[in-house]
Image (cartoon, rainbow, N blue to C red; front, top):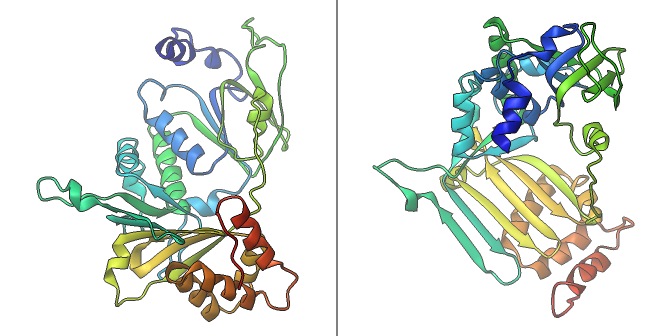
Length: 343
């Protein structure tokens, strides 16, 4: 079924999109110019089966600065992504990796994960997969902007090679619908989605792809339901400088599961690490307002101290604020532990 679908969409003898107005219709329209959207555009533009087709990428933000991004030493973005070796190989295949700044792409070989209450733990060591004397990498930490910038440069390279791919930036999708209409030569376009942009432009898509995040107009148009619920948790993200006297930290990813939520730290280049700490909203708010030195102390404590001691620290950083941290901690224990502690 998949092969038949691909053939009907892209490999038919007649190219419908080229038989109507070229400033109107595309074989593929991608909504969203984030990491997923731009890399998909690169994959399509690099595919011999699709590169002759007309492709459009729509993004609400201005991508000019992203494309021309140049990193600054000791300055990392909090928005990062973890890429597997398989993904990096795919990026190499579609021409993205050659445009990435690899000195800002950091691989790690160890991962240590443990429970903050029981102490149960797992250790993932890529040395166990050592083949032919070559060390394996579990994953690579990369800034999102590094991937986006490389993909945009690859798209420009594809355009210079004759691939028709247009980027509509600084414009949002106002509406997506199906309009019964035909082109000037009588081709029926009623099954082609019509994308109305807020700058007045209207696009037709043989295939419409949504890479547009949580509030996706493409998903709404397709009638795809989204079910979810509030976890009563927030994530605090930060870029941290690691202790230079602990060189193993630059090759190891750490994650500890606490009663209030997990905390993870993944190494970046130049001795930095990306941290995300998921916890109750009251604690998260307090963590974002305390001095930098206190924040570092809390991060170290979250990886080392007992959950009882951490409960005490939570009360210290929220003292004088309207957060019932003790109540939040009790609530977290009610559903998942046998006993409730107090201190």
